[in-house]
Image (cartoon, rainbow, N blue to C red; front, side):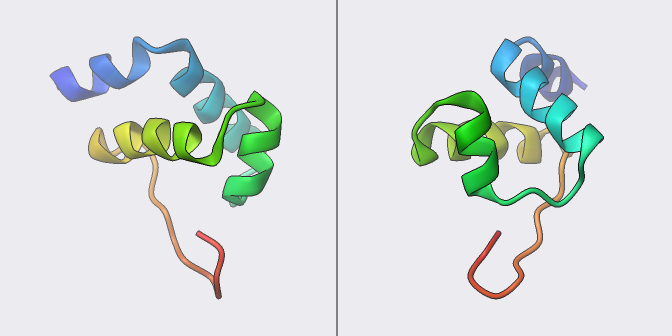
Length: 64
């Protein structure tokens, strides 16, 4: 339960969750453009959401 609150404490992670709630299945590139961050920065935040089991990733071709 603490990992969920820790993940939701960050405004960037909440923005990612909101964006994914509006349109599920966005690629990393789309999320990177939304937040104006590096790919690695977005991946770090998505990893935190994954650890808290708030998002699930799937790989389609070369896109995750």
